[in-house]
Amino acid sequence: MGMSVIISVATEQDTEQILKLQYLGFQSEAELYGDWSIEPLTQTLESLRTELADRHVLVARLGDEVVGSVRGWVDEDGVGRISRLVVHPRMQRHGLGGRLLRAAEERLLAEQPVRTFRLFTGHRSLGNLRLYARQGYRQTEARPSGQGLGFVALEKPAEVPLATAV
Image 1 (tube, rainbow, N blue to C red):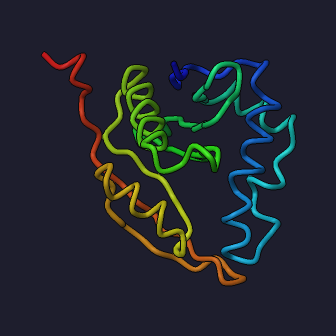
Image 2 (cartoon, helix red, strand yellow):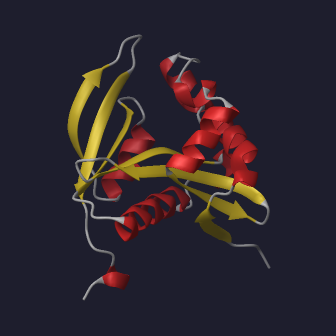
């Protein structure tokens, strides 16, 4: 019998695994854009620890292994910001990215009012763009960022989770 993937809040003990997963998972993005200096590949362990304290960080676990992660926070305008969604390459295309994204949204909604969710991805990241479209996100902006990298902003209105709907 196989193990199932469990999504939970990240702990301090997960920090190194998250950083290693992030480095592995964002290799394809770096290759796609020819830019090995992208932030997910240059982030330090200390910086990640700070994010763990300041933001909502969720992980997907397969046993003791962290196989996915996502971060989120709500800004002063009530926008739920989602970032650094990453799934281990061997676990991709099985719905785990969508599960992590929904879990992050639900977590943010449970903490405080959110009017909309916003995230960014690279303009050539077609797999990411398809995932976000399936999850209800729509492109709101595209902007060049230099060195052939362009960012696409996507948003979707926040909805009250079914479990808390009256």
